[in-house]
Image (cartoon, rainbow, N blue to C red; front, side, top):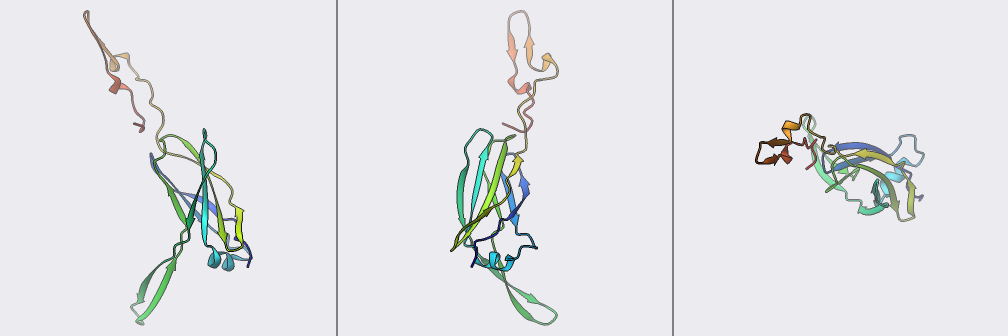
Length: 154
């Protein structure tokens, strides 16, 4: 048995506070069958532009369900393995980097290439007109902080 090959990463769903990464194994991999059947789990490494790499270990969970072929009445047991991870509670409008390492009984495999993904949103922009921010008369001034467009970030 060999250590797992490096997975290939792609971007899944991206929101203002979460990023989903999806991985697969290259079809031309010489040990694709071995790699897919012997993976015990994954290490997901992530970081923002201002932090150090952090890792999270996820064990391979195999969920299965039964399907039936209605034409011939045959039952099939279908097994699904983990192939994605969603990082949550992220900062909006922030660039994050991820890479994944699969592991099995022989140890950690090769790391995937890192992928950079930015959450939706951006820093607030300034109001286009001063009247959207400040309302003043001879005796008082009201500063309307809600006049700043949020661009999706709270």
